[in-house]
Length: 314
Ligand SMILES: [Zn+2]
Image 1: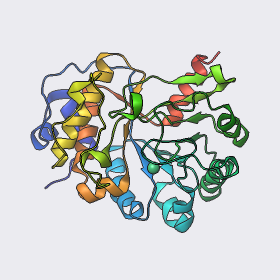
Image 2: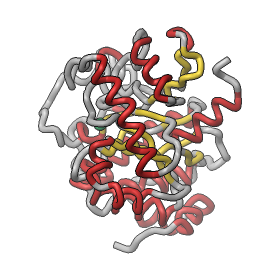
Image 3: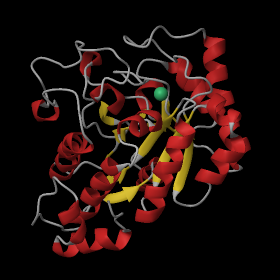
């Protein structure tokens, strides 16, 4: 199959051209007015299989000039520092932390109990140190392993560590209510109530895509909420094809646009994306939709900077 280019995407935006014909599932004739809703491609980079997968992902991002945030586990990064630096260095990508070794920073119903506080400190500080040592640039954001349904709300001790380490934002709200999926389209908020008005929560949205494909081999689980707050975002079965996955993605992208969300970002994992879709066709379909609908490509770091400048935390 021929590869689509950035130019193809622009043509699609303007006239519903080449890429729309090549990509299934793209509706034509949509409103393409510019919008301020940002789209953030983000990757929880967390296991040995992620390195090769990132090579394929980066190729698509560079070809389509699409920025991204890579949240990387420090231990994974330290296993291949030169390779990751070569792959991800450059202005298109933000490198953030996915903790040092993916241990839990608070209790998670599916992933287990929080580790002791001294180990949580290590996860936070060593994770940041690893990114900054390898990439020689500031690491301002952290996504904790697995995430939580209540973010770091009511966790001032962890937030104190986050602040001491020098992080500006966390992305920890990655589940819907009562540990359901999908994670709803939640806006950024500051941790003012916990006494940290300068630390921002920038949530993730949608499904942990690995679970859409049963890649954790959990089988059917009690994951969705009743009554469902977002029924159209719940597919009838596991995704079988990249188009299936794209159709789930577009529900979130379109809803974010319709409701004027500041941003939308899905929860993706390189190892799982590559296992399901080695040619990364889902990425092409999703990024084409982003361009066509007028979403504004961004990183989490850029979203944070825009919030800080707008002074919304005060
Ligand atoms: Zn993870």
